[in-house]
Image 1 (tube, helix red, strand yellow):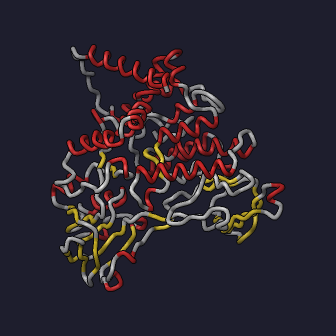
Image 2: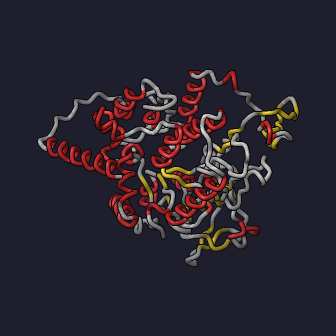
Image 3: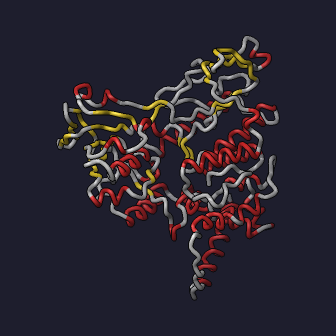
Length: 468
């Protein structure tokens, strides 16, 4: 699900791979496409400014710093790939008494390992993915961990139905179509019922104040077990600090040795003048989260400045495919007024779905966003045509995980192995699990019913696209 679209991750790698394996994959990709000869490493970008003749040439003056000192280089185009996990967000003004707290404090950005927390009492503030992961890891070493949350969270399990990875099971065109066409309350009720069937979020102190699709969810397989065993205790928001602990908003208090702020990040572009991109509380006006409409020359794009319900690598890649075509002049952007109108509409829709937070300014749905960009470069798969010409492939494209290889089936940059890779993707999911040989289960007598249901769903899916 997170592979580059024309370079599958080796099938031997785990579905949820260790970061060392991810680094290995990046190196394999760089070697395959001979990228290292074209990259200067160890260079810090100090500033990017419009050249004096930018209106005519589109040139950029980029001030850089390396071991050889500072220098200015001239470039024809820029891709800004600094991401949105840029500057740790420390909302200390929200916690009276912080200055008198005598324990240690650290942001999750700087957390590396639990060995310095042995037998400590620790509060983790924030219930995003980092906060949950750190709380679980510390619970195996610390004397006690308190996980403090202002709103609560819905907790997903990486292991999906029948052991299939969750993203592969649910990040599909069919699932996206259901979510987009069912009433918002129905989609939320359905998802929340599944999660509460695994464990009651209210009993575990996790039930949030918002619906499932109104926040970026937490993915954590171990947190419920840590709460059940008592090594992690859920607490409400911290109201104030004392000299040796914290007081929570419900009036309870705890003496603690330290606090970890898992309070997210702020992002910005300090190397640009604000006339190019201005960011206020993680809000910035970019067309399709990429293009600043104020520029007269379309030769600078932001890559990966989004928070998807899905993997970011394929999104960043398809953004680059669009950006390079615009840079070359093969494709044109809409007028500044049209881009501004689209930005306003996107912001309105985001505000309608998500509760107000610095965390929810760059949210996108994986399938819808990938399709939007793919359509602009002519790489969006035609599902109806596939059902008529290649039903086997069509069923995978429609119902299986929406893997990046779908965006190499057609259009510019089509990859001849895309079809084969899509048809074999379930094999690739299963392969790293098959370290012990097992005899396959015999089909049950209910197989015919399952086939019939699949046929009905296929028919409904096709009719939906034909009518809309």
